[in-house]
Image 1 (cartoon, rainbow, N blue to C red):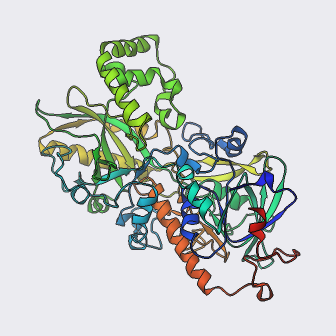
Image 2 (cartoon, rainbow, N blue to C red):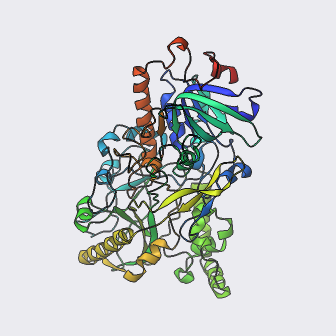
Image 3 (spheres, rainbow, N blue to C red):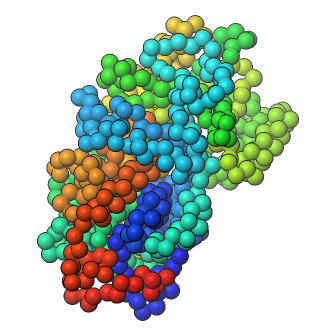
Length: 582
C-alpha cells in the first residue's frame, strides 16, 4: 500500500481501472479484478485507522435533524469503509423487490433477481456469512425449535433467515490479499474531489486527487468506478461541474434524488398464552458456526394484495429506556449509554430527558437482578468481546413470554427525498452535503397494514395477542428518523436517463467509462440490509469490466503499452507507471 503523502513530486498516475473508495464494494471489486490482467488502482480517502480530520470531510447538514443523523455518522472514511463499524446482518433481496409494482411509485429494476443469483454465493463468502442459504429448512440439517409454536399464517413466513458476518472489517480482513496482488495498488489518503470529462463529454479522462497535506495529483484510467457509498457518490458527481454546472450524469436533475434508507422501529407488546408457550427469538448457530436468526417476513402475494412494500419483523426485548421491564442488563445498558457507540446507541441517546426517579429505578433493576446481569456480562465478554465471530446483538429472554416487535420495512422511492450540495465547503474545497430525507404516506401504510395483518394472524392462530396503538405507528417508525447507515437510491439504476442515473450495468448514462458500485444504484430498498447485495453487484460489475477488457480497442493505438486514456496535453506515460510509485 502507498500513501499519497509519500509520492514526492509525482503528480500523475494511471491504471486500467480506478476504483474510488475502499469499502465493501471497492475492496470486493479489486479482489475480483486481481487476476484479470488489468492494472487496478484503489483510492481510499482515509488511512488504516480513524482520523478525526479525515472523518470531518463527511460533515454536512440535515434539513430536519429529527429525521436524519448528521452525515458524518454511520459512515467511516478509512480503509475498510463502514465495514469497520457495521453489525454484519446479511440477507439477499427478494424477487419481488426487482419488480415494477404499480402500487409502489418509481419501482422496478432493469434487472431481475436472476442477474444477481450467480454472484450472491461469492458475496456471502466475502462477507463471511457462511453458506448462501436463507431458509431455515435448507440451512440446517437438524430440526429447529419453532419460532412461535402454533403460529400459522398464509401471509407471513417464519422460516426466512438473517445470517451474520463476523462482522468482517473488509480492510483488516483483505489487506494482505490486496498487498499480494501484483496488479492491484492501494493509495491511501487519496480524496477524489472532481472528475474531468473529455471534450466530447462522454468519457472521464482524469480525476483530481487531493490530500489534507495540500498535495494533489491527477489519475487517468480506462474505467472509473465510484464505490464510496450512497451519499458520497452523489456528492462527487454533483461537485464535478467544471464542464457542466449541473455536475456529471445529472442532465435531468436525478442525481441525489430518490434517497431512501429503511423504515424501522419497535412497537407494542406480543403476549403468548399459557406457561408452556414455546417461543424462540434468539440465534441459531449453523454447522459452519454462523449465527442465524429467523424473522417474520411478509410474503410477496400479501404485499401485492395489500398494495404495500416489503416488511419483516423480529421478536424483541422490551424497550430499554422503560425501567418497568425489571431486567438488570437492559437497565445497565441504559445507565451506560454514554459509552455505547452512537451507531448502535441512538435509541438510547434519544432519551435525554430521563428523570431522577427513572434513573433510580434502573439502578434498582441492576441490583435486584445482579446474578442475571453478571451472567450476561460473562456471556458478552466471551461471545462478543473476545470472539472472532461475535454474538450479533443483545438477546434477553424475558421471565414471562412477553415481547415487543422490532420491524424493518421497505421505503418507497420519492424524488423529493434527496441530497444536494450546500454553500459550505470542506477542508479540500468540496461542497458539503445537505440531506433532506423524507418518508411518505405509502411508507406509513406499509408498516400499518403489515402490523394489522400480523396481529390478526397471531390472534387467529390462538397463540396469544399483539397489542399496540395503531395511532402510534407513524410516531414509532419515525421516532429516530431514517434508519442508520443504509444510504440508498441517490444514483438509481434504470433504462431512462430522465428518471435514472446508471444503466443495467451500473454505467452512468452518457459517460462511457464511468460506473457506480454502491447502494446508490438501487431503485428500491427492499426489506434487506444492503451490504450483501452491494457486494454481489460489485462482483457483477467486475465481471462486466473483464468482459469489456477483452473487447476494448486501445484508445491510443500508438501507445499500446499505456493502461488508460491520456489527459489532454499530457505526455505519454511509461508502461510501468504504477510500478514506479509502489
